[in-house]
Length: 310
Image (cartoon, rainbow, N blue to C red; front, side, top):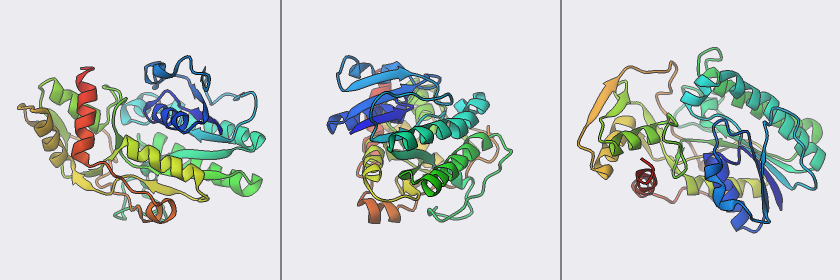
């Protein structure tokens, strides 16, 4: 296949480039680099089966030749990024998705949307299933990301119903691993970088809020299977092994040997979800997929990657 990956120089996008190239496909990575980095794909430079195009997908997208699939991963994804780039986040979710879907329709290409567990907001259902409509504050500071992704899902389904575009929607839960930015602002790089610098880990609130963490290789496998599947409607992809943020902080300190402990601060961002756990029954049934990498193993790999960069 010949595949376009928007956001292809980002954390997930670059891993997708690696995976599709390893499977023998041709890959075009497109990114405007506001949160992505060419460092993530520099090892692919010079390959005949790989092309990088610097471009903002909120503008008209031109790609010469055939395309078999488009994976739309362009978007700021961490709270720090989308709070600093609120308009860009809304634009890439709305205009960028519109442009990518238009290209998919023109090329008769399959379209996979990188959606998010944030469409569930601060959920009143636990764990979250795909048929849950969510609990989102559309005018809160997190709304720029949450509503951008909810709109993107609606637009994808509209193109599927109105124009017959083959759509796939991945609702991605917390994912971690190599190539995350140190200043990403999400909990894994925050904790790991603080621990490696010998600083106390900053826990917001009392640490009783929960998250579930999926190692990047597991997520990429799920996305690959979803693209090749016949499932049109959203599929949760994440690791259902839930734990509190406080327990996670203690694990990071233990694995890094950090003796500085933990400090507590008030929540930075309103409407922070208090629980987050995917129900992956659908992914197990439809994709025959579930995570394989244990949290401690994945964290050790991630810590070693960060250790070389701190």
